[in-house]
Image (cartoon, rainbow, N blue to C red; front, side):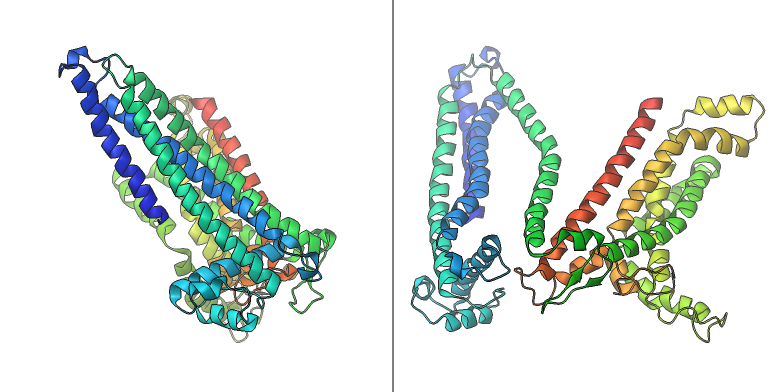
Length: 490
C-alpha cells in the first residue's frame, strides 16, 4: 500500500467518524439540540480528530525511526574489511542505501526481476550495469557486502512498511471507536476539540524550530564525516581552494568566504542607498497616487526569478561593463578582460536586493509615530530636516535590521554568481576580476559524477553548514534589532 493511499484511508476514516459522531450525539439527545452540551459538529470533530491525529503521529514517528533501525541492522552485515581505506562505515552505508533504492527502481523499471534483486549469487558487475541502465545513481561498483546489506535493507524496509500500515490503521480505528463510544449528549466535546486544536497550533508553531534543527543535524553529520577525511585546520585556516578528486586536495573556505563577502558588499553598496532613498520618497514625499503605482512596480523586482537576473548579468550588464572598462572600451583602461567579474555579479545582485531594502524600510519609516513628525514641524523644522533629524534616527534600528536581512539574502545567492562572477577562488581586491562564492562551490561539488565517500564531495556539506551559521546569525541579529524597534513604539 503506497503512502498516499494510506493517508487517503486515514482521511476517509476521519470523515466517516465525523458524520458518525455527529449522528450518535443527535441520537442521544433525541434530535433536540438543546439537550446537547456542545454543537453537533464538535462531536463529529472529536471523533475525526481522535481517529486521525494518533494514526498520523504514529505514521510520522514510524517513518523517522524505521530508517535508523534498518540502517543499524544492515550496517552489521558490513565487515570492517569491506570499508575502503579513507572511508567510514557511515559513508559505506550511504552507498548501501543508494543500491537498495536502485534495486527498487530497477525492478520498477523492468531491468531486473524481484528474484534477481534478491539473489546474492548474481554477477556483481551485471548488477552494477543493470542499475546504471535503469538510471539509478550509484557511485561505485557493487560488491558482495554492499549487495547483501542492500538486500537486507530492502527486506527490512518492506516488512517495516507493511507493519507500519497495519499499526497505523489499527491505531486509527481504535481512536475512532473510542471517541465514538464515549460520544453522548453530556460529553464536553467542544472543550476537548478546542484543546486538540490548541495542541495542533502549538505543533505548527514548533515546525519552524524543528525544521531548523533537522537542517542543522543533517548537515552536521555529513560535515563530521568530512572532517574525518580532511583536516579541519586546512578547511578553516588554509589559503587555497583546489579540489582534486584524484587526491591531494586543498579545501580552504577562506578564499570562497572572501569572494562571498566581497560580492555581497558591492551588492549592498548598490541596494542600500537606492532602496533607502526609494523608501524615504515613497513614505515621506510621494502622493498617494504615485505611491500606489511606484511601490508595486518596485516590488515586482522581488518576484523575478534569480536565473533571469543571471541572464541579465550575462547578456547585458557584463558586456556593458566590458565595453566601458575593457581593452578597447570607452575609457580605454583595459581593467576588465571578461564579463564574468565581481562587479558584474555585485551590481545585478544589488538590483535584486533593492525591493528587500525599500519595502522593509518603507514599512519601518511608516511605523514612526506621526506625533514625532508633528512635534518637529511644530517647532519650526522643515520637512527635510524632520526626515533627517527625527524620522530616520527613530527608524534606524529597523532600517539596520532590513539591511542585515538583505545581506543574508545576498550571501546565500547562487544563480547570479554562477552566471556572472566566474569560478576562480582567490584573494583579490580587484572588482574587475572573476571570483567565486561558497554557494557556487556547493553546486559544483554536488553536480556531475560525484563520489560521496570522498572529501571533495563532502566538503559541500561543511561549506553549507558554515554558510547556514553565518546567515542564521545575521537573521537572528536583524530580527532582534527589528523587534527592539517595534517594542519601542507599540
